[in-house]
Amino acid sequence: MGQPQLTLYDGGGEHNADLAKTHSRLMQGGSWKKQRIVVVLPAAATIPTKVSLALWNIGFPPNQGVVKIAAEGFEVGDAYSTALQNILAHPELGQWEFLLTIEHDNLPPADGVIKLVQQMEAHPEFAAIGGLYFTKGPSGVAQIWGDPKDPVLNFRPQLPDVNGGLVECCRTGMGFTLFRLAMFKDPKLRQPWFQTREGHTQDLYAWTDFRKHGYRCAIDCSVRVGHYDHAGSYGPAGMTW
Image 1 (cartoon, helix red, strand yellow):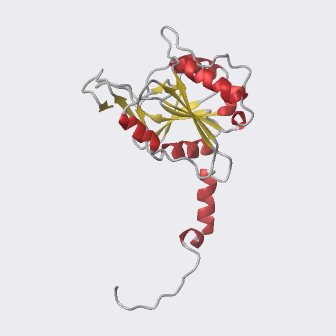
Image 2 (tube, rainbow, N blue to C red):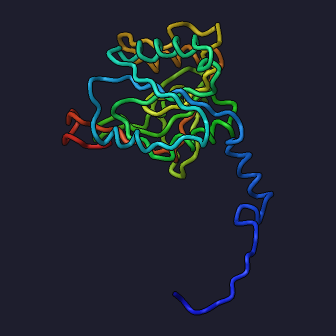
């Protein structure tokens, strides 16, 4: 016990002390609205322990719906397209707000989903916002693909914002990306949305079409995602780039 003292109840609490500030914070985060998320993970037979720990620790908006789907045994483009077809055909999930794509070799931060949702609420002009991760290897580049200021569609890797801001691009990777589910209901978009073809990964294939129809994307450089090299293909096994 410390020194004897008289204690008075001062009421309210920290958030009630400045309700206008609290109201503004809640409006920015949008947690009072529906922010339901369907998560799709193209799944191999196993995933590394470090990746599973990262995925277990992801936080989601409080008291919002979350459904997690492992697309097992599919090629990665087929995994996303098949999962999406089934999600949109579902009477409930098809009405949800967001699709989160995660891949088996990415280590997102625990608050990554919360940050991406907040950015989506703050930036309705974007159909997708991803976390920042790099291609594997000592010469890895940021997966911020394409300079939208260039009138010619391109997918050149752009520089990350060292202050952690948003960087608009022409294409995101899919290791940790939040999409507006409503985009995939647009009948103008070709289906299947994601295909892996010679010279085209499934994300490049998709965004070539998405951009053509006016959809925009960005990377949140404050959401820093590791890219895990379990097999040691680009350096020591277990290296995170």
